[in-house]
Image (cartoon, rainbow, N blue to C red):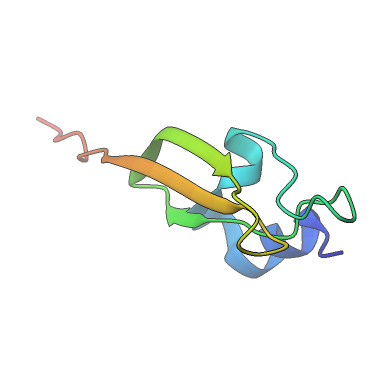
Length: 74
Protein backbone atom coordinates (compact mmCIF):
# COMPACT_ATOMS: atom_id res chain seq x y z
CA UNK A 1 0.00 0.00 0.00
CA UNK A 2 1.28 3.43 -0.91
CA UNK A 3 1.04 5.81 2.01
CA UNK A 4 -0.58 9.19 1.25
CA UNK A 5 2.13 10.93 3.26
CA UNK A 6 4.74 9.69 0.77
CA UNK A 7 2.70 11.12 -2.08
CA UNK A 8 2.54 14.49 -0.34
CA UNK A 9 6.31 14.38 0.23
CA UNK A 10 6.91 13.69 -3.46
CA UNK A 11 4.60 16.38 -4.80
CA UNK A 12 5.33 19.12 -2.27
CA UNK A 13 3.13 22.09 -1.50
CA UNK A 14 2.41 23.00 -5.12
CA UNK A 15 -0.05 20.19 -5.74
CA UNK A 16 -3.39 18.77 -4.57
CA UNK A 17 -4.34 15.12 -4.61
CA UNK A 18 -7.62 13.30 -5.08
CA UNK A 19 -7.37 11.53 -1.70
CA UNK A 20 -7.59 14.82 0.20
CA UNK A 21 -10.54 15.89 -1.96
CA UNK A 22 -12.59 12.69 -1.66
CA UNK A 23 -11.54 9.34 -0.26
CA UNK A 24 -12.35 6.11 -2.10
CA UNK A 25 -11.23 2.49 -2.11
CA UNK A 26 -9.57 2.13 -5.50
CA UNK A 27 -8.44 -1.47 -5.00
CA UNK A 28 -11.38 -3.35 -3.44
CA UNK A 29 -9.56 -6.69 -3.08
CA UNK A 30 -7.39 -5.18 -0.34
CA UNK A 31 -9.75 -2.38 0.71
CA UNK A 32 -6.96 0.15 0.11
CA UNK A 33 -6.58 3.32 -1.88
CA UNK A 34 -3.74 2.64 -4.30
CA UNK A 35 -4.58 5.13 -7.05
CA UNK A 36 -4.45 8.91 -6.89
CA UNK A 37 -4.77 11.90 -9.17
CA UNK A 38 -2.41 14.83 -8.58
CA UNK A 39 -3.06 18.31 -9.97
CA UNK A 40 -1.26 21.66 -9.61
CA UNK A 41 -2.80 23.99 -7.02
CA UNK A 42 -3.84 26.43 -9.75
CA UNK A 43 -6.59 23.88 -10.52
CA UNK A 44 -9.45 22.75 -8.28
CA UNK A 45 -11.34 19.50 -8.21
CA UNK A 46 -14.88 20.02 -9.52
CA UNK A 47 -16.01 16.40 -9.26
CA UNK A 48 -14.51 13.01 -8.47
CA UNK A 49 -15.80 9.48 -9.04
CA UNK A 50 -14.28 6.12 -8.24
CA UNK A 51 -16.02 3.61 -10.52
CA UNK A 52 -15.52 -0.04 -11.35
CA UNK A 53 -17.05 -2.55 -13.72
CA UNK A 54 -14.95 -5.68 -13.19
CA UNK A 55 -12.56 -4.96 -16.07
CA UNK A 56 -9.69 -4.68 -13.63
CA UNK A 57 -8.93 -5.19 -9.96
CA UNK A 58 -8.62 -1.41 -9.69
CA UNK A 59 -11.45 1.06 -9.95
CA UNK A 60 -11.18 3.94 -12.44
CA UNK A 61 -10.75 7.46 -11.09
CA UNK A 62 -12.69 10.07 -13.06
CA UNK A 63 -12.36 13.77 -12.31
CA UNK A 64 -13.42 17.14 -13.58
CA UNK A 65 -11.18 20.07 -12.77
CA UNK A 66 -11.47 23.85 -12.90
CA UNK A 67 -8.70 26.32 -13.56
CA UNK A 68 -8.35 28.84 -10.75
CA UNK A 69 -7.00 31.98 -12.39
CA UNK A 70 -4.54 34.02 -10.36
CA UNK A 71 -5.86 37.14 -8.66
CA UNK A 72 -4.38 40.25 -10.18
CA UNK A 73 -3.11 42.85 -7.73
CA UNK A 74 -3.63 46.57 -8.14
